[in-house]
Amino acid sequence: MNHELPFESYLISVARPIKITAQKEREQIIREQYYNLFKIPSPKVMIDMLTDSGTGAISNEQLAGIIVGDESYAGSVSFEKMKRAINDITGFNFIIPTHQGRGAENVLHSAIVKDGDVVPGNTHFDTTKAHIEFRRATAVDCTIDESKETSNEHPFRGNLDLKKLEAVFLKTPKEKIPFTLITITCNSGGGQPVSLSNILAVKKLCKKYNIRLFFDMARFAENAYFIKTREKEYQSWPILDICREMFKDADGATMSAKKDAIVAMGGFVALKDEELYQKCATYSILFEGYLTYGGMTGGTMEALAIGLYETTDFHYLQSRITQVHKLGRLIKECGIPLIEPVGGHAVYVDAGKMLPHIPHAQYPAQVLAVALYVKGGIRGVEIGTVLADRDPFTHQERFQDHELLRLAVPRRTFTDNHMAYVASVLGEINKEKDKLKGLKIIWEPPILRHFTCRFAEVD
Ligand SMILES: Cc1ncc(COP(=O)(O)O)c(C=O)c1O
Image (cartoon, rainbow, N blue to C red):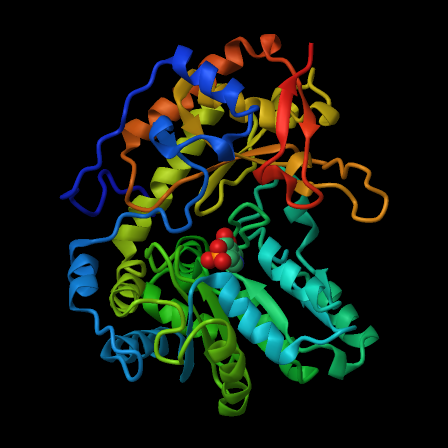
């Protein structure tokens, strides 16, 4: 089957100009901001690939939804519309709106995760892991071993290893496992999908041991697209049916709607069980807002409901994933190593391999991120030793096996020309990569250093 669509499945009706900057100006800016890309004002970035979260382009229908949104504090019609859409796609009846994904995680975890608990899953996203550890519980990574290699053509590198999962079930008292979590797609593993057969097998195992099963469904539609195009049994299934099958019989989900619902802000918890809903509702009112808005405007809830359907349109998904993969292919053609196969929302360049002359202690992926900004005005993000931070007890650096530069692709935002430009700038850098110098950290905060730390060039 030919998966490539020769053009985007939408027209661009509102354009936002890019302010063109010169390399000299960018050299000065990056020096002034101590080589930290989080400090660069957005008008000084030409192609922003820092994240795919909340950065997609809304559609004309979503814009109309924002205008007609019901902003009532209680009983908003827009909440009802959003609830119907979530119920239709996931089958879950009880919906709690939240301001974003981590808000949803906070509500759910406050209700059911306790000190000493264990939450197995495929690689938990940072905020999920933080919410688990904040409650002195442990996130156990049960992803298949193939996910750890940078180049392994396994089509579903986000899959859970059933043996690892069963081992957790066998050695942990049942009451200490509040739930198993499947993150679709697996962001921390590079936006890698989970197959439907793996999801069904995990469901069966959870049922056998009577353990709840939840999804982190931030990129559920992209996951469904990979199932349709890579898993033979589901080739003829509509995307929406695949989604329904993924969620069927599970206990619930959290979602950052900033991804696959294509809204700038928003999220929710979706639950099967009313008793758990009542428990979560208390925390929702405490942290997020009343139960029919939870930190979102009525307009956002309208746009979210519409976005959930737009994102499950096969042709939209085809053009989105095709664009991400095209970027990967163009970068690879320049002889630059990356995580393969490319996932759903981003390309991860293996900066450690690309710049072997720069040791981990001089942050090769940060060096590459800075070079990409200086040469092309493009902003990516370091996923390596800087992000990994220091060990909280020993204060030693946690050197990573892979020093990666993530180039996230916002939804419906860039054309293929933008992507070709990104690849060509990387290609130019690759030709002169031996000239790149390492970086050292000259100031850092006690935690979450990557946002604010200051770097200087190593002589
Ligand atoms: C898989 C996954 N879960 C949860 C979150 C957290 O969502 P938010 O940024 O909306 O709080 C993210 C954000 O990137 C994510 O990718």
